[in-house]
Image (cartoon, rainbow, N blue to C red; front, side):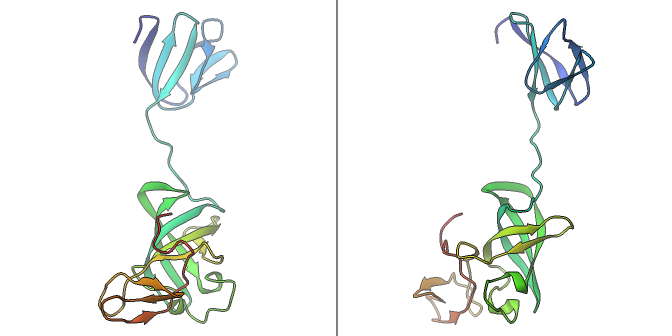
Length: 189
């Protein structure tokens, strides 16, 4: 780092960095009544050459589930009317701390589904979309051809099921199982 740019100190949101007569506000800052403040947690970086101050962010912004986002999760529990899903990927971004969501039987498919057992089993990896984020846990849907099961395992022997002629077949015991299959079955989303 050149002498012209210098890390001043660690800062948190709201820390006073200087005044606009002294510094031009840069990335990670905001101005209130002529005073430059830190907007994010990080390190204040001062450029004496162009009299600019910015904050280099050192924390990641947490991901919160939002309506419309596409998610990947693992089915934890299945009951007649709903499934509990542990979400670990949101819009392609891997989460460090997964969150829990609910998939109601009425949102599994565009067609009638009698029970969740007809479409999902515990351990299935699914691709879904968040349709409700007002209350926790979030509500999901798998209606649509790109949503549904991405990876499934045989209920009898535990082997990964293979998609064959729109059916899931166990290569070991030849068991055929029914699921709400995504068009991306067997692929990473």
